[in-house]
Length: 434
Image (cartoon, rainbow, N blue to C red; front, side):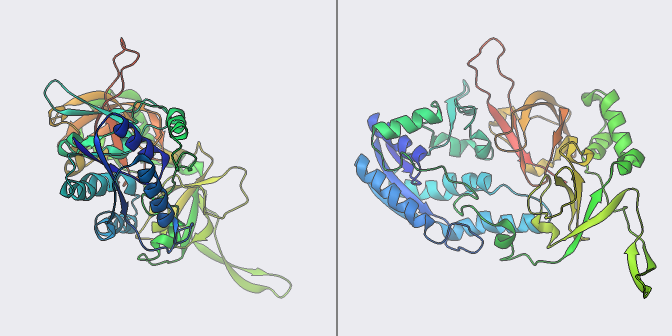
């Protein structure tokens, strides 16, 4: 069997190639360049060249053929343009999930097959195994701190059938040790950070390549708003007294909709200041909130964001709790326990639901107790999936912090309580809606 390893220059893909070579496979390496521009990046214009240099050294060390492929055009079309479009709508996409679905296990796979590859191997910390019906299951990796199955939550059966994850059964420390023992040039290389194949970026600067910067208000929302909000009180009343499966389609739709702060308005008044009684204008006090700063564009912020607000005078950090793209306004709340950060229900529209195995899909009226994560490295959270006419609803047992439109919710099967080694299977995923 001929296997192409996506060699990135990092230690994980290097050890994946090492293990496959040791197991006797016909292995070759291919390095892909997916990005040329440097505007907004924090590491300069030669980072990909350094990665390519290390990858080539690893291939030479292992004695395997090395190829280079430039996929920057398709990457821009399928990943970066999608990313810009989502941010322009006030949603926060996950480019790494898209990169795996559209690039690594599609465009890259096709290039590898053109060179004779039967399979493509990567350095992802996850595993796959075949189900009794012949379909392929995607499982969490052994290392609980490095599991990367979430990033693969959108790939399909054809892609999974041609994928190999040689290091999924290893701990990161074991991978480092294998690389050191084999004297691989990447053994001590730090893990990459930032956007897949773009690198670590100053996000507002990066987004300003296509999205216009326009100043707007930052509004802090006070606790009094929630005390007087009919929707907030109504939603919590329903969730505290109802069994999720008994909720109507209308109730679920209402519960999944984020709170709307647009009703917090600020009237102005004139006053005279100083010994010359100069006439000035100020905002009247509002019990529900206060304008506490300015921003450069609501599309540059995401739910739960803490950094980049540059607003002082608070005992606890401020967090973004909502963005209003149309009004170009962002709303913030003080402290991690702020009510605006926490929700229990999210919705995935019918066209955005993806099941890893065809036989796993719920039909309208169906439900499934499972565990869900809404971001990478989040611990799995207990929830129930409810399939209704207007989408798939995820109702969590406990409220979740910073449910963010545009991100992916990934759902996993409950582990076998009688098998301590049973790894959670990734059942499916979908894009979180507003």
